[in-house]
Image (cartoon, rainbow over all chains, first blue to last red):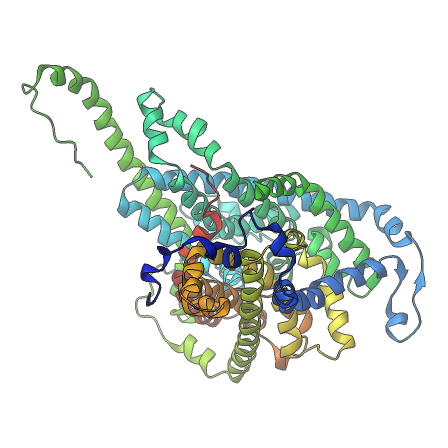
Length: 329
Length: 302
């Protein structure tokens, strides 16, 4: 990072300069319209390289899937039969199946529980970081970083080993030192509820570090003077946290909570890997894995994915609108 | 930390009055601080434990993993688990595929995101706002609901089981966040620097490459590492697109290793997991500070 030429450059700016260069001042609207075509097209040209892969990799599949969700498109069509329009049939089939509602309800419950736990733990630990000494803080940061940086598949592998029914540490701790004899050889993944408990432990363990670091970075940005002023006015440190610091970093909390809800609703890898580790799949499906299991019936999968998109929007529309309003400001 | 010098009580009368009131809470505060510190260390240990357990188990021979009492320290351990993984040709095949996909994704994503970030933070033009909103909203599309459609698309183009095909969907997945992140970095370099250079006679392009670009290097590195982590660790799309065992990426390879050895040999599995984790953690430690501070920069108006 050499910082070469521009040293004394700012000073000499006599009259005539500002118009052609900056162009941003309100005094020059007529000139702007006459800018050469090349520079008006410039920004659009710069956007094309990004728009093409976004369109090909996301936009096109999204539209295609949406269209197919109104068609009969299964194995026969993969071998060349033209697809028939069936209107809302796929949606009706799905939404009149109580099993599908079960999957939706489980997904939403799983998402909200995980997002709430992650946020609560993450905020608590971020506050904790601001209250402890340097050594303790760095220890906590390193621990969080190691957990955060571990690739998801490696994480899943270790947790399977930890929850292994025969030689896993979790069963050993519960049966040995904690004296719960019944836990010896206990198989965690058979029962849907304990399956979700294991999944929750893993998802929360993986997601908390991001929340901790982001919220902690936000807390550091709260101006010192505000906190001091509140202290002089007699606010206890608890009050300063609840009434001052957390409200001030609300934008950060919003973004983080939004991301958690989105990520936890679309959780796939963790559920999929745990299912392959020997859980009953039908009883443990969430939205992502259920769509995956529908892959042979393409139009059903498309309809289900559209439903999932609608649920995501329903859960997040409030946040998104707020964020857009703040981006404007 | 204990800079609480007990003030000489005789010094100034006014002060002596204040001190006794303040001292006791201070001492209690110090005790509380120690307790909280201990709590923080405990939490850290709990969070590290799985990672530690992976490495610990990777060094233990099977007969010490399959005992009623777990071994908490790898004393008298062995390297045989690592040897088994590293002599397995399928590990290297998967490594090559991962490397190719990650490299391609990274190169494309960084370049495309960079020019896009430039456009939205340095130009005012019609449609700018809707592009920014698109970039934001696209991140909310549940990709997990899209993979079948992506598979079908790649299938019609004969790009299933191909590095190029997987890279296309990866680039699309990584781009929105990369653009978002780089936008922050580009806006962080004051336009005045460029304008000053332009007054000194550089062209707009020249000013950009001579002045702004060098200042953006940290941002480019940070988003590059972000892209690396995403592509290197991704599992879902790889599972869908790379169905041929010869084209597996490392995460798929690891899953295969788990399924082959789960019942018999966790040591080898842990060695495999540790091998793909170590480089990632190294990169990760390098980048994380920039990532989380980039997200909150300017979010709090003081």
